[in-house]
Image (cartoon, rainbow, N blue to C red; front, side, top):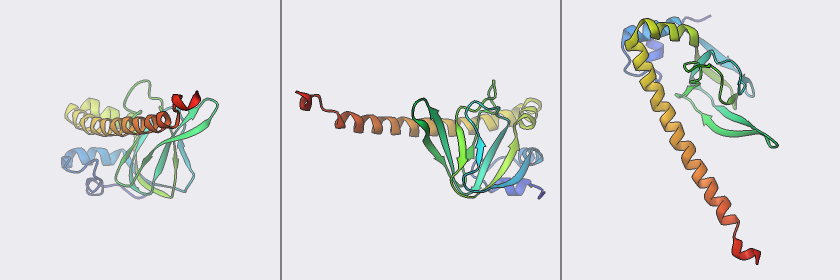
Length: 163
């Protein structure tokens, strides 16, 4: 296995400008991984014990919709973070994820990173702050998609045409 260094982590936008000491701690919990296209990384409701910083490729987030099967809800791309459920109890995935193309990523062991954050509150704060930015951005993107989808559905259904 190839060792992950603080210098390598510093190149990813999620960790850019993080202190060298914090990067060194995170490097100890990281490994480099690759996934082929159509590889299921995790399933909705499964135990969340990892997260990834995507270096290349794309991952589709999906959700099992009763009566409709899996529905794609978002795409995680190069230089983005995948997974935040590892940080919040009960540590269960809220969505599923499958690689849409071959993927290279830094993979982090969630329990190890949580323990590091507990022993170093400054690291915990820094990671939580960065994670909150990602969550807020994705919630805004989801809100926009819902509004757009609702508008399209509403314009397709015209009650005046029913009479």
